Length: 153
Image 1 (cartoon, one colour):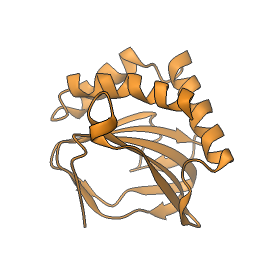
Image 2: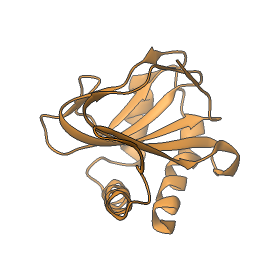
Image 3: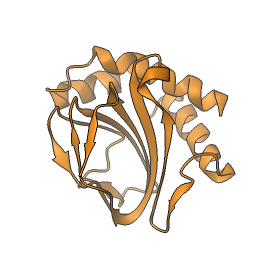
């Protein structure tokens, strides 16, 4: 999982430079720095999918919703908590993004949506709340929470 950790750290270092009160601008900055069709995102996807297949991530939960914590904020170079979630046509637990949330979404195909979108990068703004929902198939999602700031329930 060391390759995955190295790739995650590159994004983690960038996340604190973003203004997560402005989701569209933050998504554009992420896309400019880490293009969805670029080699870094492809390597990150391959490493994450290999870790899922090996059972080293997304190994908690069961059925349509499996998850794992990849990094705690105090151990991450960008001071983000990072989670991985594998979802198939399901809804996750309700939570609040105290300092925002950066998502890197890997849908299995073009029909699969997270929050109604098939986008690779998605930013949910500071203070937003939701129960994450994947529809029309399976998606692997990586989440960065600045400062580990998320409130469940």
